[in-house]
Length: 242
Picture 1 (cartoon, rainbow, N blue to C red):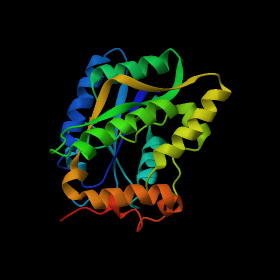
Picture 2: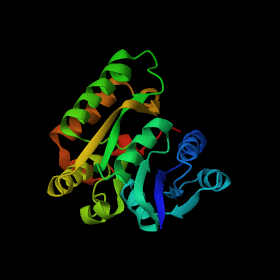
Picture 3: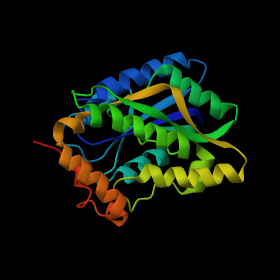
Picture 4: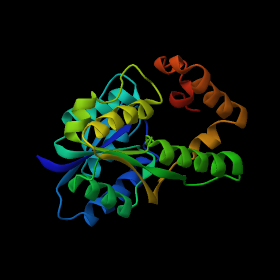
């Protein structure tokens, strides 16, 4: 059994994965007294995602059916760590945030949690590039909801929760957070959202979609939450420009 496992779901992430793995390498180096592993879940990629992962020393798990929850759970099944870190393939985690999360888990002050986020660039779009992430961070902290970019929990609680809902193609982190919060309350522990060192996630959707398309995706989740069970209806998260 290792101290921790970092699980990265990845579909065609050759452009971003190297930076993510580099940042996680710094995290592991800063936590030199703990033994960990990095697992990249190749979600049926058609680019060099697996090759990049293997070259970095990560263990590659193949999940043929597309789905973020399926990929996260596939990585968890192969993980050997006592603590799980779920990190998106386009996200860079500050070492200080990683250490904070690990220390919370090691000292059993929390059973899980996440972090506030920050876009790598705003692309001059103040509302979607700055204000919306700030609004999400306020909701995340107030209601203890982890962003999918960075989620951590202990192995036992993850298994008790049943993992990520595999019938959801988006928003799975919200439902997982809710299940984890129930487990935390039962055990009189915290589900902690870290605020001091935000994780840096890609703002690529600001380049892929216009304001109307982004608003439509948000509206869809709020008004038609059952649409999250259809991958076709979740094309905002799964379809990429050529």
